[in-house]
Image (tube, rainbow, N blue to C red):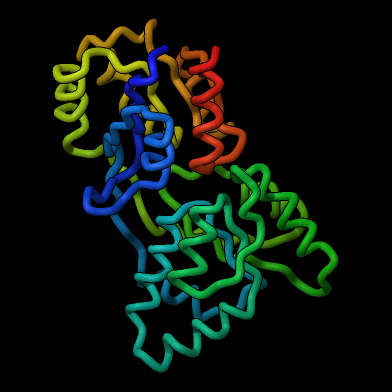
Length: 263
């Protein structure tokens, strides 16, 4: 595979004015990363989330940056004094996160100290939470702001150990309205790309039918997953991922792609 390989990053809603850390890291290999936004996010149930933030929990769980944004939006509904009181309260509680990007969002946007950023998926986060909470005395409960496509990994894994989890569906993921247009444009300008990188199971769900319909040669594409759950989604769709990032980080993805380039 040539050094000028085209790497397509199928990500969530992308801000064209902001630098993407995954794309920037891949450019250091003289690759051509192309970002195609695959999802669009809408925040929902923010008043319900705002009310839940006023209740007492042992901590909070974030499995995505969008969940952090949802809590930030729910906080903004409150008056200044109430918001400050709640912020101080939550900063003193346990904050569990999946991945470094989610940890960074919680730390910078909310000022929370985070636990578990080394976990690359919800399944890996569950034992981290259990190690923290099981030794604690008294009732244990966690607030879990999540998306409409979440799996029950967190809730089932914790509630089986007598840890109450209150799920608040705070955002919903829908197919990006320009996905078809952007993939057709990519095919017209660059032909069939060398590598497609998926960042979520929902990305697989929304884009694969389009990729097949526009005529891309799937048999010549190498598919890369950002983590185990996305790898599983590709397998269920009948595709065998060529690589999976060891960690959901720019460095982890770059290493996975390098293994393909060398191979």
